[in-house]
Amino acid sequence: MNMYVWEGHGQTDTGPQRSENQDSFITLNDVGLWCVADGMGGHKEGGIASHLATQSLEDIRHKAFESLNALAVAVREIVLDVNRSLCEMSSSFYDREVIGTTIVVLMIYQQQAKVIWVGDSRLYRMRGTSFELVTRDHTQYEELLSRGLVHDNQPDHPAHHILTRALGAADHCELEELNLDVMPNDIFLMCTDGVSNTISQMDLAKVIYYSEDKVRAVANLINMALAKDASDNITAVIVDKGVS
Image 1 (cartoon, one colour):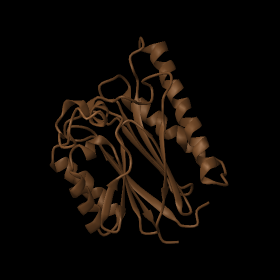
Image 2 (cartoon, rainbow, N blue to C red):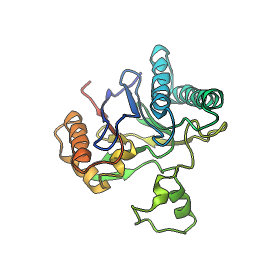
Image 3 (tube, rainbow, N blue to C red):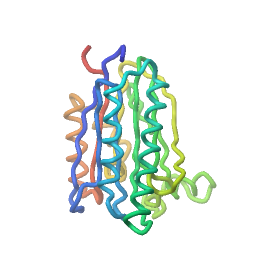
């Protein structure tokens, strides 16, 4: 499907302060699709929710798509179906307690990419020496920031941890989507908040820039988050152009 061979490598860890890993990820290199999900740790069955989200996308590899838009349509349908399933599970078995997960999905076809997400799992892109956050968190803090009620230099503000959107949180789930141009030397980082809340954006950039390859870079990120005593599960996926 892809003119360029894009490859992703991921790693996940329970982290030093959690007893269960509710993160999940998949790397479908043959399709050009990568996904990270973070089950909502304060709610029941967060691990089930995140794994349902990622594993439901596994069916993508059994289908053929002629364009990035066609792939994105299929992804949206699957993700929204997961949302319906989680809401039904909550209603039927858990007295309507939320069973939820964040999700971020990256798709690359030739020189174009799409990202679809809901929640605060993130996608970053490194191009040359520039490292930028592509997604925006669906959190109460971001809403306060957009209204000018807080400043963008309050990393410890409690509203950072309050999600305003997630799969399973409501019958209607509003996904966000962006189109991206892609250069052959681009490097993408997808991660859960166990990484982004623990490691500064500058340090994330340094690890990716100076690591010899993506396998080493992912391992370095996980180890750095562990050394910094991450308060949540830790998951990172790095996608770059492999050898054709």
